[in-house]
Image (cartoon, rainbow, N blue to C red; front, top):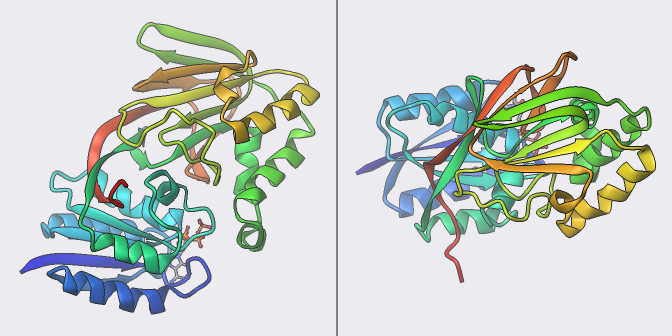
Amino acid sequence: MKQAMLIVNPSSGKEKGTEYAEHALKTMNKMGYETEIRETKGEGDAMEFAREACESKLDFIAAMGGDGTINEAINGIAEQEHRPLFGLIPLGTVNDFARALNIPLDPEEAISILEQQNTRKTDVGKINDRYFINIVAVGALAEASFSTPVEQKTKLGPLAYIIEGVKKMKEKQPFELRVQSDNVVWEGEALLMLVALTNSVGGFETIAPEAEVNDGMLHVMIIKDIAMPQFLLLLPKIITGELGNSEHVEYLKVPVIEASSTYEMIANVDGDEGDKLPIKVENLKRHIEILVPKEE
Ligand SMILES: Nc1ncnc2c1ncn2[C@@H]1O[C@H](COP(=O)(O)OP(=O)(O)OP(=O)(O)O)[C@@H](O)[C@H]1O
């Protein structure tokens, strides 16, 4: 019999993880997997469980939780030689990765997608020695989301990050930035750098509309140091998908970048605090096979 692990963060989303987990477990059994269920208790558990599942050469890993849990599971899988088929059931507030893969945000519907057994090889990002699935952001707007209160995130969802960020950006904080990729170098004062792997960032599916989950590319957008009114005028372009076309934005589509600054900048990696600059960011093309909905 095929072997699987179901990783569940019981605290994710609206705390209904355990209820949905029973449904997922039944579905996975129906799909022919003998399934072990593992509940996380805190940080690092989802990564550890996923790593164990790879080492035991299981056939399938499903993770149920918010982007934090999914990200941890991917981190556990990405560096392994044996990388099982992966499935995700979103329970978070933003669920960027599920959005990018067209996985329904309703957990029951996401569980039924697993049953379609339709797979897609998907890119995984690497920043220094950890992995990410969505975005690396550098700048005051990006650092602001570290301090977004959890209650606010739960109430407002994706909007919370933007609101917190814009509040902070009233005190404009440009930084000196150097970005290099092969023979391209960009150097200057920037307000924000976004390195997107997929098209869904902070709940908006239009930041990098061109980005595909399997294109092997980083979509790098550097917002230059501009006056606050100009910056505010850029925000609607996030919604309309035109951010990359603005004269105030440098848009690079490359597989690898190295970024450094003379300022002390901390990268925001999939919404959480990551490494300080300098960073090397790369796209590992079609690195993990994931269950996704059938295209209509
Ligand atoms: N049993 C648990 N109780 C409390 N916290 C937990 C538990 N298991 C894991 N965690 C913590 O949950 C965090 C990940 O949460 P996750 O992002 O999956 O959900 P969320 O916060 O509801 O979603 P989102 O990030 O979309 O808002 C990790 O930091 C981890 O430490």
